[in-house]
Length: 193
Image 1 (cartoon, rainbow, N blue to C red):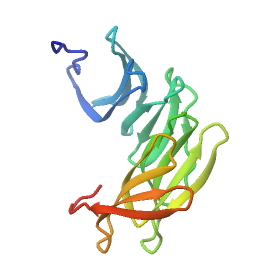
Image 2: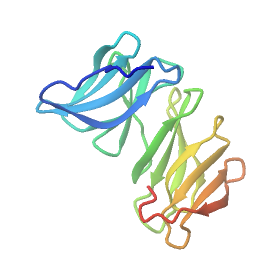
Image 3: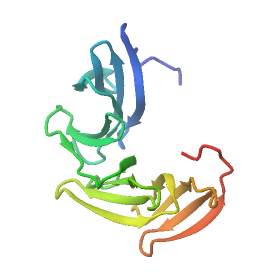
Image 4: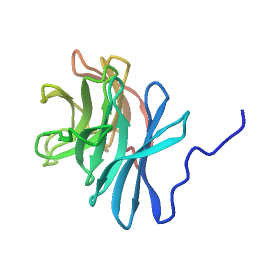
């Protein structure tokens, strides 16, 4: 049970945002940035074999391997959500509604991506949405009490989220079937995201 280095960031590069393991624990995806721009890298943990999947002049961040396939989800230029194959091909930008795409995660079956949507005006409520990758359909799951982060259970039937609302500084349980929120506790955080 001794620690051993799996990878060292090369000279001239810096670690980027996000490091995620595949569900089987065989791969890790991460980003780096340097003078040449940004890149997404994959490391096979047992073999310590590293390869570059994507390169771009705009920021690449938070890469997540797909649970059931040879592709990954990543952020580009801050709020764009993209998918790409492990070979860097089949790049697809998710067509999301007007506003900003917030935190995003794969569903456990790898068929869809759940994400927070921040509408363009403050009068509207933040939503949790689902994007079906193969059919390229986007649907609303539920409006929220201004969630700024969330996490689904195994089948995404229940989601937990932290609200940024000053009147609702709570962690909520959201039932997907009814869209109803149940407060769990106050988060007492000045930065709930």
